[in-house]
Amino acid sequence: MVDASVVAKWHLGDESHIVKAMEVLRDFQAGSTILVAPRYLAYEVINTIVKSAKRGRLPSAAVTATIRQVSSWGIALFDDSEYLDQAAEVSQLLGCSFYDALYIVTALREDAPLVSADAKLVRAAARFRNRLVWIEDYTSPAPA
Image 1 (cartoon, helix red, strand yellow):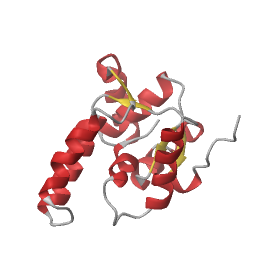
Image 2 (image 1 turned 180 degrees about the horizontal axis):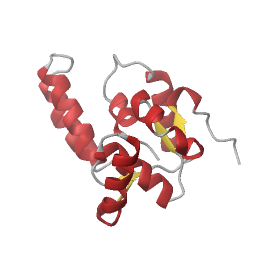
Image 3 (image 1 turned 90 degrees about the vertical axis):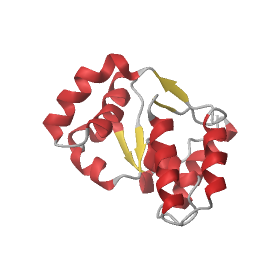
């Protein structure tokens, strides 16, 4: 499972941890890993790209290109509506954003490790360390 902090890096070449983010993408494209996320991942990534374009980090055309790519990513996007109550509880418990809590809850409920480049999220969710993978600790799956 990935969050927007990883996926946005696939589109932003000037980000930290880009090498590891691209490794996740290569593994996914090669079929050696399956990626899942809450449905709102697409909106969060597009929002990040729009903000980056507004700040001059990307040309405006990159926004349109990213929107077109969203549907072709192949990431399994879960209907997260059944996780909302639990995400609100986790958000309050950890003091993190509701959106970050939704990633955590989805990882827990889908029994999938969450790869994140969001240091604040990883720190807040330390009690769920068995479900979180800091982007720099990501390792490609061993060949079958």
